[in-house]
Image (tube, rainbow, N blue to C red; front, side, top):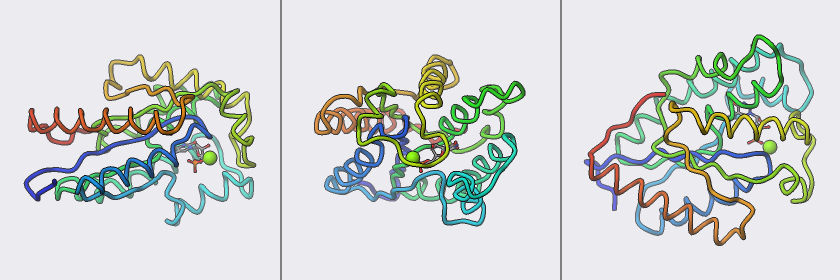
Length: 217
Ligand code: TMP
Ligand code: MG
């Protein structure tokens, strides 16, 4: 049970479109609340802010943006939430977040714009609150597509999803992203749910044992 002297955890879900992030993050929120924790569920892009509305219009194909510009808008959309994330965690609330800077890096780099590398893409994210654990729900683009097919937003097509997955795997192998844990998202939802909860409980124990404070990206 959280007390004010006990900081919250920062848990992020990442993965391809249709990897099960929404389902699994909602289940984790419910499980943590059942254990008595204070939890806030957020997602990026946060389409409710003025910057988020520009992103939404771009994703729906209603407006165009230069690749670097949309990248920086996605990043700015995280920065505008950064203070409230740090504040909640310090006051004992756990944040469960669908997508974060990892998506920011890989979706932009997957466009194969020669001046927008994975390394370039990560720079504006430096200094953001760093997740305690990033749960990468790994699924093949083929299996993801079988789950009722993709929607109609920009990026929801198989060539893009293949490049996104390759870049997630590249990011995972970087020493900078040592909070990345891969979960096989092709398993039944109940199995994934249990694995996720185990990983989060272990993360909680390790944070408590070391009294680790929240780090920065
Ligand atoms: P959603 O499907 O989770 O609402 O995300 C919308 C799309 O935005 C999804 O295809 C991933 C993409 N995206 C980026 O390109 N950059 C980012 O920083 C984030 C958070 C998402
Ligand atoms: Mg989507």
